[in-house]
Image 1 (tube, rainbow, N blue to C red):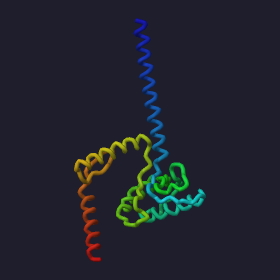
Image 2: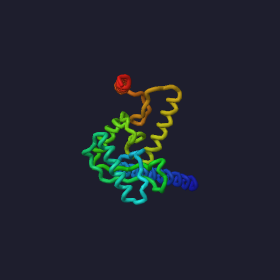
Image 3: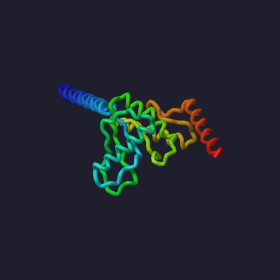
Length: 193
């Protein structure tokens, strides 16, 4: 009987430890979310090859200002911006992403809303540039699973899919109609030239 009590305490201790660990992970995730609440990540922005850090930083700031201008976010206040990862001389083939911290969550939301404007731009300098919110490690893992599901479903022939609210969903009809209208405008412009 004493042995059963000891085993019961061991199980109880392990459960308490697991609960404590889960609570700690949840708190760390919550703190991480708070730190990232005004940040976005910019991918694909050409990286300067200058050897001097200060010159590269100025080049990045100018490029970032240009992107914000093109998406009608001139009034957005950038608090901090820096490249993620280590700079390696001569590695200009794939630019490192830039983490951008904005003045408020409202400004971040405006930037994310207006990034849709980037996809319609046909400027060579913006080709491959995209902006998304700064995700925690847990969110990135969940997003990665969704991207894989999206690719798999598209490869099986499904169309007009997108990721929204943590799910792969079919785009709303209004978005599809806007895209079709945009394509028709582009075709008629091309035909009139």
